Figure 1 (spheres, each protein chain N blue to C red):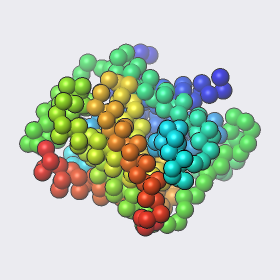
Figure 2 (figure 1 turned 90 degrees about the horizontal axis):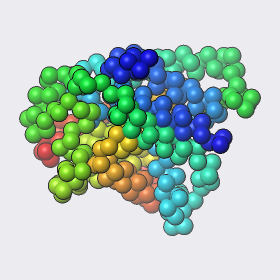
Figure 3 (figure 1 turned 90 degrees about the vertical axis):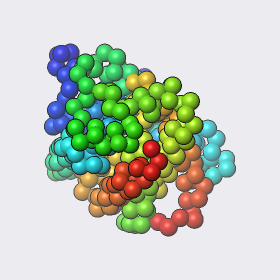
Length: 137
Length: 185
């Protein structure tokens, strides 16, 4: 039962992503063609508010539901994997119009083709796990 | 209230609500990152017996799978009960560009010509979706995160690596949109 709160948060996430149209293949195309402010406005608002929120959480040493302090982990300082991995991700994001979250949200919305995209994403994840030590990081 | 939710959301409201999700998860003692679920799902399917990368304590990630299940339900609810009858206000230049690629704007969130059950009979579309998904899955694990982990959580915590990853997302997206898509559609 302790887990149900995550499902509720997920439901809220699915509704927000759908209503914001961030799960839209068309909107992602529009973003990569720089033809509307919509997606930039969403991401920009999220980042600006996120920076302020994280700053305040750190400053006031806010605690989570269990009473332990909220912590943040620094990403490791290796840049090759971020630029190469990011570029590969971007190729797929523009083609399918979906990053991992929206794939599942769109599946719930009834787009059957998203099941194929999810299958591909699982294969891609597995492939990375297999050749992880052979690619530059 | 329902009427308020039903109308198309302005970008500043959408962006604020996405931060709310990040904050809810932080308050639950977790961090917002969706693509980890793909690794977890591989592990559950037994990939850990063959590949070390998938041999990890995936049970610690069950909360994230619960979040994933919720996201599917959320998509269902939003589309069936909270959607607005007005078509997506897509820019006219995007509509024109996509027309040139042979993809009609049908007013919905995603083109039915690519994502409907009917479209899955077309082997080319099937292959494109599979390859696209593969790139997203491979790239997000290689980069150690996706849009939620890097663009939202990472940038909010002023992580330079996340900025590099987001720049990568755009390099890839621009290459696909401008250089590859005109040849494959």
